[in-house]
Length: 543
Image (cartoon, rainbow, N blue to C red; front, side, top):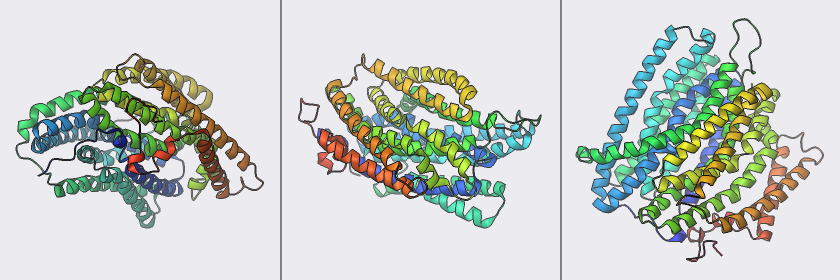
């Protein structure tokens, strides 16, 4: 067995792999939108889809924690250190030990949760029994998916550490294809909405098995497998889980606001036993879900992709105590990410209505559903830039082993979100939930950057500010073009041209303005690998 390829230390390759990850993320999101469109057409906004979206939040939260958060940030540095210092066999033993420990912990958690859900169905819940029973049933069906997707995330982290980003990035697309097929089969099999949604929930568990099998087979072809001597690495595995705990808390905090939105939307939309109107309209939880899916499109395509390929490089910099290199790499990652995230944020705000009408206005998803989802999409879209920046800033803290700062700033943002939610629901009902989350996200980023100014990580603020000014200028020109093109007679009445014309015109305007003002960062991702992040040593501006 040969040693995996070492992490690249040279600056030109710091973001190598970004295009591959982004390509697969794009494919996954496109298939995901087709899946969401099919779900919207099949169920519309209502109680069934509200319950499903909340039930799916639990295993999906685990995916966020272990796929893009705690496990990867704790495991990767330990894996790299074990591989570099003791060889590939030691790294394989560590991987097996962590897999075994993770399987035991998650299986116990799922078994306990299933018992709690079974007991809860015998008790009378606060919402009407039938309303709550639907949610409890879907949760019980989908919980095993949690174990499968978390193990798949661990194996994906091993592939990422060897600079193999293709299969890890392709796994969400695999699930989306499976989900889309299951939705079509469910519609063919039965016309009963309750049976359809249970069919789809069960299919996700099978999809999780496929997501686990794919990286396992790739690793097996590379010579990796279950090492029977894994007990020799129990001490190192314990260290991984100890390091993971603060990150689990920090990442959970970051995801808490979104879960709180969905939970409150489901709870407040429950039918009242007195027969009165619910606090917020039924379908708000599903509208939040569809809006978040649109918001997560640029977040995944830009933020998660940059963070995925940049984090191993930042960890390697920190391991060599190269804090200047870490600062320059992190600054460059932010410049590149924000040069795309800021215009994406503006585009979601300006085109929220046309996007939702184009994607979801089918079947049982009517014009009122599209209007509610569009309003929430615009609110979430306004903070895409903040979510992308926060993702990278937190990776900077994690790379140097600081997991307390993200936890503390995240807890502060939760408190802000709770306060804003109380006001938002009173003023804006369901839309107020999204406003509270958006406000707390901006607060979270601002607090993190404030702490970073005094931290050993830091940013190269001069080059960052110059790039930001150019990005804002190009985005302003793009926004003006979008607004003007939406005023063309007949455009707003067409679902297709109402989206295509302002979108194409806005993109062309942004590209032209970026070229005129010298905004180079977006083009680095479109050129060859060695063109990404080129800089002269000592000049982090890249000029």
